[in-house]
Amino acid sequence: MTSVTLKNLCKAYDDVLISNNINLVVKEGELVVFVGPSGCGKSTLLRCIAGLEDITSGDLYIGDQRMNDVEPSKRGVGMVFQSYALYPHLNLYDNMSFGLKLAKADKAEIEKRVSHTAEILQLGHLLERYPKMLSGGQRQRVAIGRTLVSEPNVFLLDEPLSNLDAALRVNMRSEITKLQRRLGCTMIYVTHDQVEAMTMADKIVVLDAGSVAQMGRPLELYHYPINRFVAGFIGSPKMNFISVKISEVEDNQVMVQLSSGETFWIQVEGETVNKGDRMSLGIRPEHLLNAQDAQVTIAGDVQMVEKLGNETQIYLHLDDADADVIFRAPDTITVEIGSKFHIGLTAHRCHLFHSDGRACRRLHREDGVDYDRMLEEM
Ligand SMILES: Nc1ncnc2c1ncn2[C@@H]1O[C@H](COP(=O)(O)OP(=O)(O)OP(=O)(O)O)[C@@H](O)[C@H]1O
Ligand SMILES: [Mg+2]
Image (cartoon, rainbow, N blue to C red; front, side, top):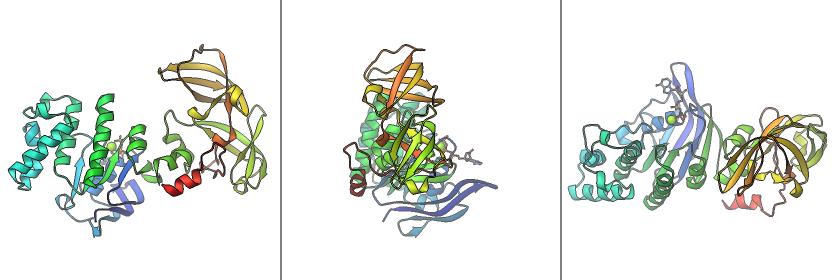
């Protein structure tokens, strides 16, 4: 049993609370990704689980055993540090085999595991080198390798791919996921990379200033963010927000009014919204439409255009709504900076947030996808 359970876990340095009443369960064999802005306490939580920091209050269980006071080496946990922490006086082979030698593993077994891991991480030709003779990306892979060879029950990885080039990152991402599936180990993985979080995670935990804002399957967080913070954090480029006023309320729908005066209905649980409320309308850049395809159109001034080849990101200022938004068009399109550009909205793609940030629950989205069933199946 190697699940990881945090119950009302708090961590404070002196009287500054860093992790605030964290409750979460990482099931055996699950890959859970922690995301959140810099400084929100991701590394601190990993260090508490690994036993490198004392837990101020609350409980940590690994499997059935309460681990608060168990030494790090007895927790069955392996951690890849954000800062690598390699031994400078040992070459790459010795860095990777250090833990196994300490555990008095069989020599042939050590050799097999190190060479296999080095091959996966494309480090086989560098085994004689010392850390100072490696690039940042190579050091990072040694740090991963050192933890992988020890095959712990619980892996904690703190931004393990942040220094790799794009191609290697994609490659390592799938290698780590495959390895995790093959070993059936429990993994907690911290990243700032949206694609890593969405593609690797069984579940994502979004942390906001030391608290869990939302925990769920990647698509659940994308389609049903619980609040404006999560909505803005999951997805890249981030969700656009436009201030609106509620001009009518019915049971299952509300009428939103843009600053231009234009109105349209959005299907949400209406009873929690009042006529006259000021709310925030959220729509993702990839869900904005060309004006001719949409229910509602808004004109904007083009402020910046980013051509990525496979898509074009157009930064617009919407005069009528007094908001800046990003429109994401597939393919390469030509747009002049300073020109007028018309974009469109459809109601089923919109999210609505109360002034305190809470999301309104949406009911139906007429895009042919049964989200409720999809969530049940996940
Ligand atoms: N030893 C320490 N003493 C006091 N405060 C600390 C200590 N270590 C971390 N902190 C503070 O705790 C907060 C959380 O830090 P942490 O390293 O967990 O953030 P993080 O989410 O991992 O950020 P990043 O994405 O930048 O790595 C920060 O405000 C940091 O300054
Ligand atoms: Mg960190």
